[in-house]
Image 1 (cartoon, rainbow, N blue to C red):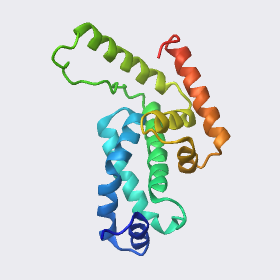
Image 2: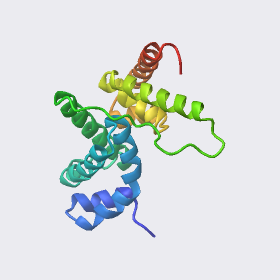
Image 3: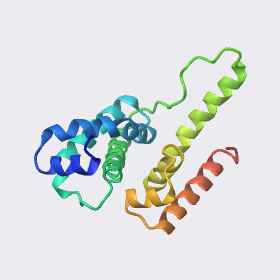
Length: 181
């Protein structure tokens, strides 16, 4: 039987480097989705997830043995994404939308495909205007489909704060997108 995440992190905290690989295999895709939906740059997201696991390795001894490993890793990933976003914004790097670049499916209306792509680009731009906490809550709720309780535990926020951030984020996005969406 495979060791649990909790067992792996305990081993990692004890200096067992071999415990990192199974943790990465289990959580890499999910953390990548979170980071890329935040920073909107696939290469930057890859670097961010790698750095997340480096930090997890270096700080495994700080992990509270009662906390969920997935939530702990998610918090590290969100913080890493925020840091990367701030650095990018300071350096005024151009933004590449995370729109679907796949060719339209057979039978898809080209105008509809174009409208969907434009809407995705508008949403990407609007997400960048959200305050960091609101963006983190929105991304975890709508991209990762986490419950409000899971978001609160992951980000260390009270339920009321999570609800408030989500409500404000949705309201801001609706205003920004002209009431659509």
